[in-house]
Length: 360
Ligand code: 57M
Image (cartoon, rainbow, N blue to C red; front, side):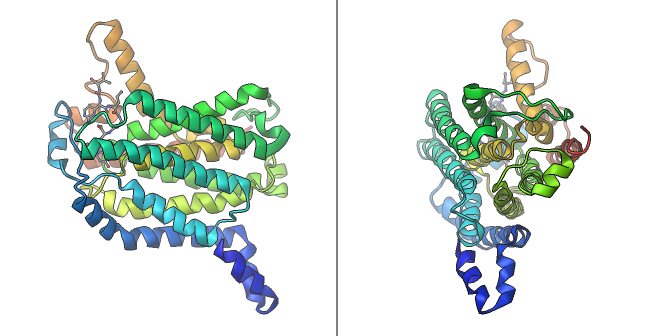
């Protein structure tokens, strides 16, 4: 927002004209959130340690995780702070799509925060309880979905199908529950993936970077028409939002890299996941999300299959443990190897996802 004040001075000093460009603001939104997270990381981690919000480790999990007991959680506060500082300087806060992203981050961040706070202060691994958590997510997601439809206008309920140029089904009012599902599912998928150091944040940053690029293309009349994708007026501003998330994620990774000094907690995973879902919807490339976020899908599917198989067979398992990253840990693979391999797989998914912009 502060950029607008400087931009107003362009009449007196023409180089300030550069502040209107999305690419310029996106670059500095990334730099700002990265620097904020690097600068404030140590003090937030010390503050979390003083609050004694150390992680409670499940006893039936991989033995290697027991040494992680006491690692401060709720590091998502650092991600949210970094994005919000960047937002105050570089976001166009009069753009409804940008406001929806900020609302999604803060509202899901609050749900995660309350959940984490109860978990760590009451030493109760259930937090606010699965039902209350899910219900809060659904209600918030429905509100967000409604505002997305209201802001995007008549094309909001139309879908673009990856690989198909001319297939554009219109979901009508059914789009709102569908969009809410996308937000809740992404939020929980990132949460499930967040079980090893740096495992969730890198695929998240890669997906956000991809959506930053997509937002830029979809918000530009010429690029959108060249690529034969839906033109979404004003959605280019989401590039600045996505860039701020990428910067905050890299900054968070500095501290969350193995061996982690902090975990993001539900404060981080629920909020960044929900915002990723909302950004996917607002760029009208929501069906690309299962490809770009393939790692999140694999992790979630591994849990669904494990639980179903476990129930159907009365106690047998497909994986040694779900989500799938625990399976590889139980197989004896070192944590750092699993993490880096999941990052590589995530990069492959993102590249395949982006290639669909041309392969239609
Ligand atoms: C939260 N939370 C991590 C940290 C992080 C249905 C079921 C599969 C759900 C799943 C689950 O509860 N998932 C959601 C996963 C936890 O991390 C905290 O939670 C936050 C994210 N919400 O930010 O605060 C632990 O993960 C480790 N961790 C790291 N580095 C990080 O950067 O090492 C996290 C972040 C931390 C730390 O050890 O304590 C979690 O895994 O609990 N449940 C599970 O994942 C459990 N799986 C299970 O029960 N599987 C069964 C099923 C489904 C039949 C099976 O396969 O038999 C596993 N969780 C753990 N151990 N910890 C079981 C083994």
